Image (tube, rainbow, N blue to C red; front, side, top):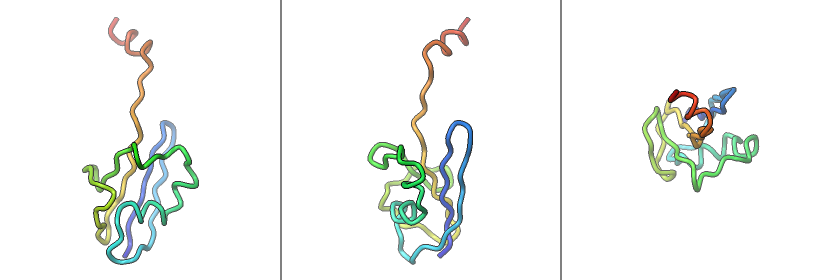
Length: 86
């Protein structure tokens, strides 16, 4: 089964296609992609994941053609927020 896995940092995005066994979960697809080794800052215990922009639990079964997404925490510099309000 062919799925995509993607992760975006502030300045770049990584999107890859890979073959996963039938009945693979979101978590299995992410692990098979190798993204956890490329980006050790990814913490699946904290970060949300989804398929095509909709949040799902890690144990959700993926379907052929799905795009699995790892969402990073949104962080805002408090000084930037203050400057925007002025």
